[in-house]
Structures are given as structure tokens and as C-alpha cells.
Length: 150
Image (cartoon, rainbow, N blue to C red; front, side, top):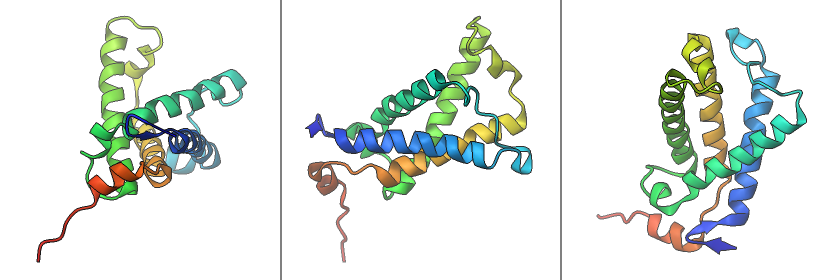
């Protein structure tokens, strides 16, 4: 099913699986190089459900043709770029919201270097798998294929 240039079935699958893999890698490599294992709420079922819903909703920005077609490269590279952009946007938004008194984002003011690296790596993992798993509709794929001039 395609809605406004977005393959909805692929978006749901890619968003859910990439959100789970982000969590899994953090849990599996917990403590490795002083990173990982920092995912909050992994023992809380409601938090996990909310994380997967967020992963799908935020994947919508990636799948939006306006964004998807502007990102360079193949799917996996588009995903890495989106993960990087997402991390920067999240950090800026969180710091501003925390400075203005938002309780949820106050933790960002105390972000350590290892936490920041952890957040970046996990969002790159999320973006990578999002880019690998999301299959845009045929109309978007056709407009993406570059022409080779010889």
C-alpha cells in the first residue's frame, strides 16, 4: 500500500525492526568500550512499546519522498545520513527543551561524551537498518536511478 509516495508496509516493517535492532545492539554490547547498555526502560514493557512506535513514526520522516530523494547514495547510505541528521536534530532540540525547563530533556544537559557517542552509534545503527530494510515504491525508485552520461 502506497500513501503519498511512501510504501506503508515497508515503512512499518523497517521502522519496527530497526528500532528493535537499535535496542538489541545496545543490550547485547552493554558495557563494551564503556558504551552501550544505557538504553533507558528496557525492563518496562510500556517503554519498549512506545520506543517501537516512535521508531516507526520517526521512520516516516526518512520515507517521505522529499527527504528520501534528497539523501545521497543507496538505501543503507541514505539511512546512515538520516541517522546522523536525526542525532544532531535530537541533540539540539533536547538541549534547548532541557534549558527551557522540560523535565524529560533535562538529562541532556548532563550528557557525557560516552553517552553522546552511544546515542550517535545507536542512531546510526537505526538509520542503517532503516535504509537497508525500507523499500520505496516503484515510482520513487525510478526517479532515484541516476543516469550515466558517457
